[in-house]
Length: 357
Ligand SMILES: [Ca+2]
Ligand SMILES: [Ca+2]
Ligand SMILES: [Ca+2]
Image 1 (cartoon, protein in one colour):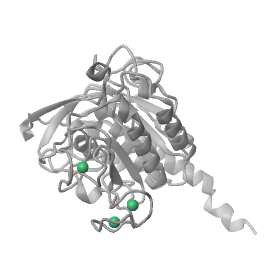
Image 2 (tube, rainbow, N blue to C red):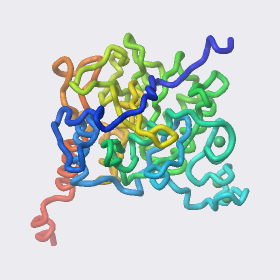
Image 3 (cartoon, rainbow, N blue to C red):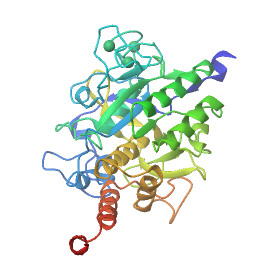
Image 4 (cartoon, rainbow, N blue to C red):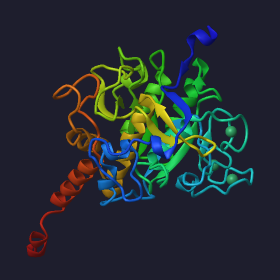
């Protein structure tokens, strides 16, 4: 069966160098940053306004199940640290079955990370940068939730693919993320076929554990990729700087939200700021926004978190729900504001609490 049956990543990563003069500024919200502007995607989802409430909390962990994450400055210190694991002592100190898994696990190589084994593809670094990288003042590139933590779980090979015999690696990575306390899982992957029961069961366990799984809708414009059609996965389509769905973005009744996925800026493994296109890069905008909301309201369950994301999305493309953008463009500022007001309502007015005997 071989290559004809492969499954692969959902991106078109454009590795063209980017110069400050080429960086789109502004966007839907028209935000201009004094340091020279943030990239259009952060502005469009109103991340800078959200950061006035929170830039994230280090207790909230987003698992990036992808091609591995390069330890770049501005990204390495955003990585989750396994509190029970002593690095590089060749011992499984916390007894979880993984030796020296300090920042996650490389399921592809069966080793702790990119320092050993096969070279990593750039896709995972790019995706992780969109979730939580420190803001690069020169280009405006940076993550949606720069103070949360990223768990590095690698399943893709050096070319960015995975194969039928690798499904169980994906299932294991999902289980690892849940067991180690991730609140959000980002799956910027596409699949040619419907995932087998080991993956579906792992996704059900994640949902039962209140973990929000965010997935790329895929780049096949006629349909949503089979992985993101599963009910446990929040399928995210792409929009361009004008709020339009690009032709490639997967369409279907399963699409729940949209996010920037055209001319998106993030980091390549050599540390350069590069541009990317694909629903792979829309999903981490939603994962990062979910992590911001959880940073403010860590007690939220999966259903309430998803409700906040859907209720505060900006309607784009066709009026109302549509098969390209779902409820609309994710809005980090509105999502956080709604979460904050609900939390205040749940706590009740201060004067009532004072009057309670
Ligand atoms: Ca361990
Ligand atoms: Ca160890
Ligand atoms: Ca490795």
